[in-house]
Length: 139
Image (cartoon, rainbow, N blue to C red; front, side, top):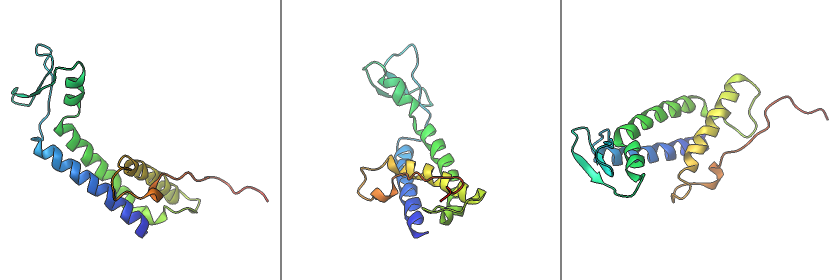
């Protein structure tokens, strides 16, 4: 369980860092008005910044702080679900629904952690694992 607790703590810490960044950016929803190409506006219609390169403005606006905060909140719900059964996420899980749920959620949490594989606290042993799930093979 300690292994999975460390994994959860790592992902939660990355989410907290991202949340801080989004809040420092005002937490606002951004948009790109059609009449002002390259401009990214905040919720008050003020220009948050200008990006004259084609396509960057829309991409940046799509990644607005408000959207990031919503994604972080929904991700925390998933982490809470996993935390309840993380002890069942093992290399040799039982073949029941709860263990299968733990392994499935664990796979998702490991994928989230892998987004931050370049972080100094990331551990290679958190790479998503693939396990055979199903009836035992006859010997």
